[in-house]
Image (tube, each protein chain N blue to C red):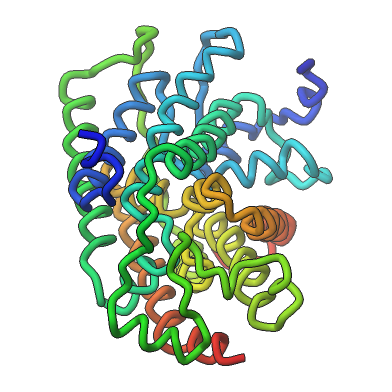
Amino acid sequence: MIETITQPWPWYTAGIIIGLIVPALLILGNKHFGISANLRHACAACLPSNIPFFSYDWKKEIWNFFFVGGILVGGIISTLYLGSDEPVIVHPELAKELANYGITDFSGMVPAELFSFENLLTVRGLLIMIVGGFFVGFGARYAGGCTSGHAIMGLSDLQWPSLVATICFMIGGFIMANFILPFILNL
Amino acid sequence: MENKQTEHVNPVDFEVRSLDTMCVNESEMVHPWWYNFKYAAVGVIFGIVFIKAEIISWFRIQEMFRLQSFHMYGVIGTAVVVGAISVFIIKKFKIKTIHGEDITFTDKKFNKGQIIGGLIFGLGWAMTGACPGPLFAQVGSGALVILVVILSATAGTWVYGKFRDKLPH
């Protein structure tokens, strides 16, 4: 049993549990699964600056802060107690490509050669962490949701605008990963 | 936790929120704040799945966008199927919350933001290798530098809010 838990979980286990988060939040209190909204609530709470988009009663959404807080704690628990020390198995093609950019450490969830405080001072680290993060926040809000709100909650509720958003997420990702990221990683 | 913010509540409050956030809750019930720990519990499970199924792995996201692995497609596809069946059942049998309230759904309106914003989000997703949920789990896994990414994403959200009126929708 413990062995089963510490192994990496297959996609269907993960998919079923994530899918069940949708009804869990609905049944616990009519809450709609959506994580990027937290960034907006954070803006509304800390720096509303009289911007209408951030002028609302963010305290009504406080449940979502608890939810992401839970995700963070889940990450800690999982890493400390349920982990296997084996590195992530990476597709050989990808490993070969990444080796060209000096990325060979597959032990963490994020490549240590890219994501570190020192790398914030390099062009490539700055682009990937700061610009990438900015795109995630800006794009998610512009699109009205992220992978959880659109791709999972929206599609579960058969909302076609969410399908449009999800397709655009994928197109943007394909363009970046295949055509732009190689240049950035070479910097 | 006193209501200093109430002066910000404007008449369009509900509209502004429902337009752009998935998280509209107009519950009339007032619960003690610690009731929110039930959502934290769901979050903990979510965080564990994120790590154990390597969904928050930068490498898995790169493989997904290079069509080198089925893993992420399997995860998201299964989640949508399970979610859709659940929503169908909730609607069909008019299931209520554990507090006896109605479960409500708001239809999303299409606007150009879903295309333009979606593309921008996709670019960022492939760079950081994480969408907003996984970012929090990555911090939990010990990658503290990801806090900077979250901060930057929050800045992106703020800038969007600031220039929202000038952007095509």
